[in-house]
Each structure stands twice: as C-alpha cells, then as structure tokens.
Length: 134
Image 1 (cartoon, rainbow, N blue to C red):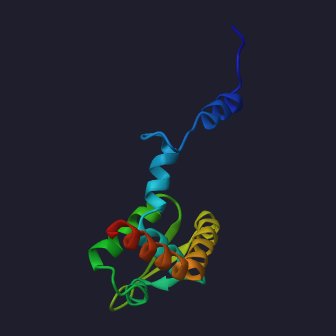
Image 2: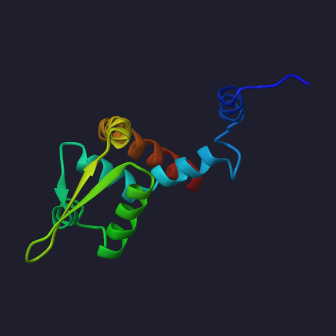
C-alpha cells in the first residue's frame, strides 16, 4: 500500500468536498455566508471598521439579537475581528479580516447584480403570476 504525505491527504479531502451534499463542510459554509444578515454585514464592513451601533444604523431592519448573533458567527468563521476599547460606554469595533475582505468583494458583486437586475426580476414575476392566473 503506497504511503501518502500529509499534504496529499489534505488535498484528497479537499477535492472530495461537494457543496451540494448536505453535511459537507463547504455546504455548511455556503449556508452561513448565504444568510441575509451575514451578507449585509460583510457589505456594510467592506469600506472599513464600524462600531456595533453604526452597523445597527446601516442595517435598520436587523434586530440587536440578530446583529450580535451574526457578528459572533462571522467572527467565529474568521471573517470579522472584534476590538473592545475600554471606555464609558465600552466601544466595540468590527472589521473584516483578509478572508472576510475577499468574501465581501463577492457579496458586493452580488449586491451590484441585484440592484442592476431587480426590474427584470419584477417583470419576470409579473409575467409568471399573470400566466399562472390565466
């Protein structure tokens, strides 16, 4: 039986990933970054660090609970760093990591695509709904 190096074993595992299969680590990661709040927070942080309260103002529909949970998840995944500055009140800043910055570029491209094509999507929905009722 031939032996393999650690690098070869890691590459074999990596090449076996299939994001379409539920339970695959890449499927789980896609689910995490595909979350609406995660995408909006990555976009909100793309141009530099932001305070917790500033993020809440930039995304007014997000509750404090979801803001906190999503930031913690992004921090856990290595996409965001959290810096606490002792003051009264305590100052908490969030910033993208290099890994998060790369993903934010992808999310910005998706945001730009959505903004450019939303009218087409609305027209397609209208056509579909009209055909469905006829």
